Length: 276
Ligand SMILES: [Zn+2]
Picture (tube, rainbow, N blue to C red):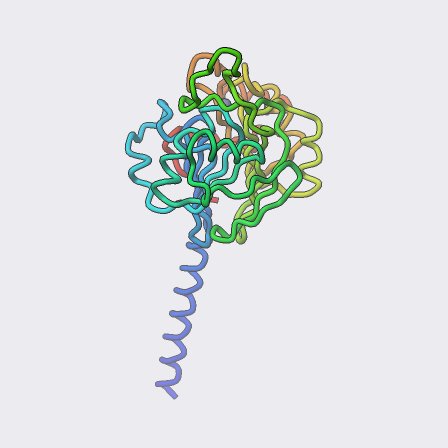
């Protein structure tokens, strides 16, 4: 009987350990490199990069690309070079699948030389795409912006040829992670009223919102977007990388406070991690 009790105690302890391990594994880790570049590590062990400009000057870690061991998916919101970033080098190094809006996907292969078998069939706004290796699915949403390909690999324009190639629609991504948060990366966008549709389809736990202004929402616009999207938390991005992106987290905090939304704000620094 005493032996049975001991066995029961051991079993109970093992069960608690297993439970603790499960809970510990369940966190989703978010890393911000700077600008619009994030790494998401999912509870199933998947790794997703979004707009991976890892050599962004504000990233304090100059070895970020070398340190990447495994990447399952690279999501690119539009063709501008601060968003395509280092995707080609990372795709070649890791074998990651690359998802971009429909037209951009073609140009990644034909113009920039991405490996054809790694570029997924580009989706488009309104579509939802499975990311099985990361235990996630992604819904593509609108972004009010441009998507010209302006990467340095573009061939020098000949007379009469365009200097920037049209490359599909600019988009944002809503990533639903199994056993983890639903994350909305706005891409580069203005605040637009159809953002009100997003919470009708998804509860957004975490919104990654551009606030720099000039090319995108400024802090006041981003605060209005937060009111419409209703996320639990918002992390500002796409500011301070260079002088034109003048919006600050302090201004964003004040703009959120005016709308009684200040409690949602989480400010990260480039190079930092957060778990959700
Ligand atoms: Zn940008």
